[in-house]
Amino acid sequence: MHSETWLGRIANYLESYLPITTEFRPVLYAFALVTVPSSVLLVPTTLDPSLFVALSDSRSTPWGVITSIFVHSGILHLAGNVAVLLAIIILFVKMHQFRPAEDKHSRSVLFLWNIFFSGIVANSLFILWSQGSTAGASGVVYAAEGIVMGFALFMALPDQFNF
Image (tube, rainbow, N blue to C red):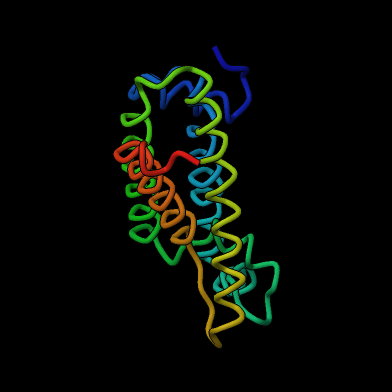
Protein backbone atom coordinates (compact mmCIF):
# COMPACT_ATOMS: atom_id res chain seq x y z
CA MET A 1 0.00 0.00 0.00
CA HIS A 2 1.21 3.47 -0.85
CA SER A 3 1.58 6.25 1.62
CA GLU A 4 -1.38 8.59 2.00
CA THR A 5 0.09 11.32 -0.17
CA TRP A 6 -1.85 12.55 -3.20
CA LEU A 7 0.55 10.67 -5.44
CA GLY A 8 0.08 7.48 -3.40
CA ARG A 9 -3.72 7.76 -3.59
CA ILE A 10 -3.59 8.21 -7.35
CA ALA A 11 -1.23 5.24 -7.72
CA ASN A 12 -3.60 3.09 -5.61
CA TYR A 13 -6.55 4.12 -7.79
CA LEU A 14 -4.70 3.38 -11.04
CA GLU A 15 -3.38 0.06 -9.76
CA SER A 16 -6.94 -1.05 -8.99
CA TYR A 17 -7.68 -0.82 -12.74
CA LEU A 18 -4.27 -1.75 -14.12
CA PRO A 19 -2.58 -4.29 -11.85
CA ILE A 20 1.03 -3.14 -11.77
CA THR A 21 3.76 -4.63 -9.66
CA THR A 22 6.00 -2.37 -7.63
CA GLU A 23 8.65 -2.55 -10.35
CA PHE A 24 6.38 -0.49 -12.63
CA ARG A 25 5.55 2.15 -10.04
CA PRO A 26 7.81 4.82 -11.64
CA VAL A 27 5.69 4.57 -14.80
CA LEU A 28 2.56 5.24 -12.74
CA TYR A 29 4.27 8.20 -11.12
CA ALA A 30 5.14 9.57 -14.56
CA PHE A 31 1.46 9.38 -15.53
CA ALA A 32 0.34 11.04 -12.31
CA LEU A 33 3.02 13.74 -12.54
CA VAL A 34 1.64 14.77 -15.94
CA THR A 35 -2.07 14.27 -15.29
CA VAL A 36 -2.56 15.80 -11.84
CA PRO A 37 -0.86 19.20 -12.33
CA SER A 38 -2.35 19.46 -15.83
CA SER A 39 -5.84 18.82 -14.48
CA VAL A 40 -5.38 21.27 -11.61
CA LEU A 41 -4.08 24.02 -13.92
CA LEU A 42 -6.85 23.55 -16.51
CA VAL A 43 -9.42 25.66 -14.65
CA PRO A 44 -7.25 28.67 -13.72
CA THR A 45 -5.61 28.84 -17.16
CA THR A 46 -9.01 28.61 -18.85
CA LEU A 47 -10.44 31.37 -16.66
CA ASP A 48 -7.36 33.59 -16.96
CA PRO A 49 -5.87 33.60 -20.48
CA SER A 50 -2.92 35.69 -19.29
CA LEU A 51 -1.93 32.86 -16.92
CA PHE A 52 -2.12 30.43 -19.84
CA VAL A 53 0.19 32.69 -21.88
CA ALA A 54 2.58 33.13 -18.93
CA LEU A 55 2.96 29.37 -18.46
CA SER A 56 3.20 28.49 -22.16
CA ASP A 57 6.50 27.87 -23.91
CA SER A 58 7.76 30.86 -25.90
CA ARG A 59 10.77 33.13 -26.24
CA SER A 60 9.22 35.57 -23.77
CA THR A 61 8.52 32.82 -21.21
CA PRO A 62 11.66 30.66 -21.01
CA TRP A 63 10.36 28.88 -17.88
CA GLY A 64 7.67 27.55 -20.20
CA VAL A 65 10.03 24.77 -21.29
CA ILE A 66 8.90 23.13 -18.03
CA THR A 67 5.55 24.71 -17.17
CA SER A 68 4.03 24.31 -20.64
CA ILE A 69 3.98 20.54 -20.13
CA PHE A 70 1.19 21.09 -17.60
CA VAL A 71 -0.84 23.73 -19.48
CA HIS A 72 -3.45 22.69 -22.04
CA SER A 73 -5.68 24.72 -24.34
CA GLY A 74 -8.84 22.94 -23.23
CA ILE A 75 -10.37 19.78 -21.87
CA LEU A 76 -10.11 17.99 -25.24
CA HIS A 77 -6.42 18.84 -25.54
CA LEU A 78 -5.78 17.52 -22.02
CA ALA A 79 -7.92 14.42 -22.57
CA GLY A 80 -6.11 13.62 -25.81
CA ASN A 81 -2.67 13.88 -24.20
CA VAL A 82 -3.75 11.85 -21.16
CA ALA A 83 -5.48 9.13 -23.20
CA VAL A 84 -2.51 8.61 -25.51
CA LEU A 85 -0.03 8.67 -22.60
CA LEU A 86 -2.12 6.07 -20.75
CA ALA A 87 -2.29 3.85 -23.85
CA ILE A 88 1.49 4.05 -24.25
CA ILE A 89 2.01 3.24 -20.57
CA ILE A 90 -0.27 0.21 -20.83
CA LEU A 91 1.71 -0.93 -23.87
CA PHE A 92 4.98 -0.41 -21.96
CA VAL A 93 3.72 -2.48 -19.00
CA LYS A 94 2.36 -5.24 -21.23
CA MET A 95 5.56 -5.59 -23.23
CA HIS A 96 7.70 -5.78 -20.07
CA GLN A 97 5.42 -7.90 -17.87
CA PHE A 98 7.52 -11.06 -18.26
CA ARG A 99 10.92 -9.40 -17.82
CA PRO A 100 12.92 -9.94 -14.62
CA ALA A 101 11.96 -7.63 -11.75
CA GLU A 102 15.19 -5.62 -11.88
CA ASP A 103 14.70 -5.00 -15.63
CA LYS A 104 11.12 -3.84 -15.04
CA HIS A 105 12.19 -1.37 -12.39
CA SER A 106 15.24 0.02 -14.18
CA ARG A 107 13.34 0.43 -17.45
CA SER A 108 10.45 2.09 -15.60
CA VAL A 109 12.84 4.58 -13.98
CA LEU A 110 14.37 5.26 -17.41
CA PHE A 111 10.86 5.83 -18.77
CA LEU A 112 10.01 8.29 -15.97
CA TRP A 113 13.11 10.45 -16.33
CA ASN A 114 13.41 10.22 -20.08
CA ILE A 115 9.91 11.45 -20.90
CA PHE A 116 10.31 14.58 -18.79
CA PHE A 117 13.84 15.28 -20.01
CA SER A 118 12.75 14.75 -23.62
CA GLY A 119 9.69 16.96 -23.16
CA ILE A 120 11.88 19.77 -21.83
CA VAL A 121 14.38 19.32 -24.68
CA ALA A 122 11.52 19.36 -27.23
CA ASN A 123 10.17 22.58 -25.72
CA SER A 124 13.65 24.14 -25.71
CA LEU A 125 14.12 23.28 -29.38
CA PHE A 126 10.70 24.75 -30.12
CA ILE A 127 11.85 28.06 -28.63
CA LEU A 128 14.98 28.01 -30.78
CA TRP A 129 13.22 27.29 -34.07
CA SER A 130 9.83 28.92 -33.69
CA GLN A 131 8.47 32.37 -33.11
CA GLY A 132 5.16 31.16 -31.62
CA SER A 133 4.21 29.55 -28.37
CA THR A 134 3.13 26.09 -27.39
CA ALA A 135 1.46 24.31 -24.51
CA GLY A 136 0.65 20.74 -23.62
CA ALA A 137 2.29 17.43 -22.90
CA SER A 138 2.78 16.41 -26.52
CA GLY A 139 6.58 16.36 -26.16
CA VAL A 140 6.21 14.03 -23.18
CA VAL A 141 3.75 11.82 -25.09
CA TYR A 142 6.04 11.59 -28.13
CA ALA A 143 8.98 10.78 -25.85
CA ALA A 144 6.98 7.98 -24.21
CA GLU A 145 6.10 6.64 -27.64
CA GLY A 146 9.75 6.74 -28.66
CA ILE A 147 10.84 4.86 -25.55
CA VAL A 148 8.26 2.13 -26.13
CA MET A 149 9.23 1.83 -29.79
CA GLY A 150 12.92 1.70 -28.89
CA PHE A 151 12.35 -1.06 -26.35
CA ALA A 152 10.15 -2.92 -28.84
CA LEU A 153 12.97 -2.80 -31.38
CA PHE A 154 15.57 -4.02 -28.89
CA MET A 155 13.27 -6.80 -27.68
CA ALA A 156 12.30 -7.91 -31.21
CA LEU A 157 15.88 -7.98 -32.52
CA PRO A 158 18.04 -8.78 -29.48
CA ASP A 159 20.90 -10.36 -31.44
CA GLN A 160 21.37 -7.28 -33.63
CA PHE A 161 21.92 -5.08 -30.58
CA ASN A 162 24.53 -7.08 -28.64
CA PHE A 163 27.33 -4.63 -28.03
